[in-house]
Image 1 (cartoon, rainbow, N blue to C red):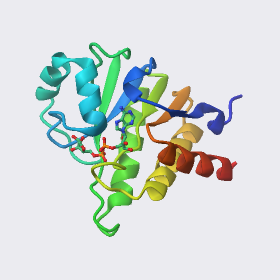
Image 2: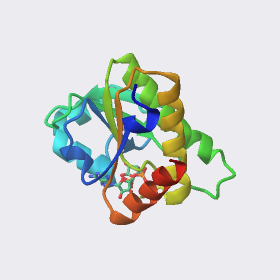
Image 3: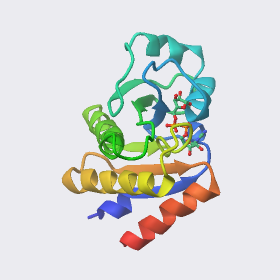
Length: 174
Ligand code: APR
C-alpha cells in the first residue's frame, strides 16, 4: 500500500514539458492567458487552448476548470486561480487550499491519475513561498489520505529556491 507521501513527488523544471495526465495552470479570473506559468502553458498548447478557455466564462479564485491540452504533451490542463497575497487576513490561505483541493477533486472526477502543480500564487501574486508550499503539501496530503483516486501528485518548481523550500517541508513532515 503506497503511503500518501509515496504519492507526492517534487520536480525541478518546466511544467509544460511534463507527460502526465494533467498539469495545473496558475491562471487569472479571465482564463484568457497571462505571463508566468499561464503564459508558458498557453504558448506551448497553442491557440486552441485560448479558444476553449474563452468558452469557460472565467474562473473564481479557488475554483478549478478543465480543458484539453492541445499541443502540450498532456491530455488535460486544469486551470485554477490563486489568491493575490494581500497580507494574509483576506482569506488567502483558504483560497489557496481551495485551488489545490478543487483541482484534485476535478482530476478525480475525470479519472485523472497523475497531476502536476506549479507553485500557485508564488509569482505575480506574491504569496510568501514557505506558507504557500505548506498549504500545497498539506492539502495534497489530506486529499491523498482521504481518497485513492489519484496515484501521483507532482509539484513542479522552476526555481532552485522554491524547490528547496518544498523539499525541506516534505522531508520535515517525514
Ligand atoms: N513551469 C513551472 N513553474 C513555472 C513556470 C513553468 N514553465 N513558469 C513560471 N513558473 C512558476 C513561477 O516561478 C512561480 O513560482 O510558477 C509560480 C507561479 O507564478 P505565476 O506564474 O506568476 O503565477 P501566480 O503567482 O499564481 O500569478 C498568476 O500571473 O501569469 C499571470 O495570468 C496569470 O494573472 C495570473 C497571475
